[in-house]
Length: 363
Ligand code: ATP
Picture 1 (cartoon, protein in one colour):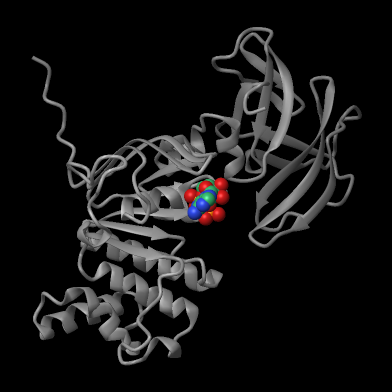
Picture 2 (tube, rainbow, N blue to C red):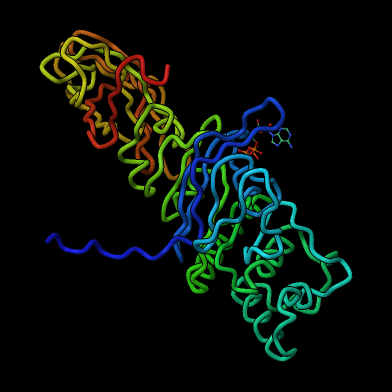
């Protein structure tokens, strides 16, 4: 007999075949996903792709129109019929516009969902969460005394306080400035993992998704395009949309010969493409290793057009010659590397940052 497969823990959220329309406008179609206990799943995608709609269906703020949603293994109801009301779902909500109760102190806000606990324990639990999110010293303040980012953290603590099995977070860090955001993301992830809650987090920021998520569902036009770990999406993108969503890329076209495509920066493998087919070659700027040549051979042509320091990286515009053709490419190299205009260079490719698709893919 075959070895028993490893038992995965039952999902805290399972969605199957979800479809949702606003009037004639189809917002989400054929979406399925699972969140397991302690797992953070990010819904990532451009504005309007249907992320918030999915979250609102799970929260019970939109009526399920088609498909199935199970919370902790139990269906929330059948499409179009009465379903489990939002407050009975044991789900924590932290939405962009989550308002605090203005007449309650920070501590009272966070303790709000803990009426079942004795006062002393309620206070202890609320203080603990506020501390973890760096807000302990504001326990006695009132919401109007806090900045937007501080209010967001209190809203997060309030949502986490009842230790829900599932947290739903919609752009919860959007009103924080860049430096604070990094810290609060870190703290939030720490608290989520400690509480062991599953989380479904909406963001349009690929870096935030990469940092927060165990798995990412990348969406486009109401569909999930690819679901996987951050590394799978970044290193094994299924189509050109996934590649470009993680940042600017160089695009070249070529013809497949002997399973390869020749480009001005060398040959690249064309797995799964037919001989003679046209190929779309996508090269991340980080894939180009640029070396300045002090004594270039007479027939050498690749050279720098422009170099700019961006901070941690330098951006180079390069004119690359090779294989009988010429291309303008962008390269991003670590640190300060600012060769003069016209500087001859050689370029090496990191093949793990190069992706080849049929020329029609994503057109
Ligand atoms: P964003 O990142 O901008 O918040 P999103 O990915 O969360 O976008 P949704 O808010 O789920 O996208 O919207 C999906 C689509 O449904 C969009 O085209 C939007 O215009 C439309 N839509 C959302 N809510 C409604 C509504 N209440 N009535 C009509 N159309 C809506």
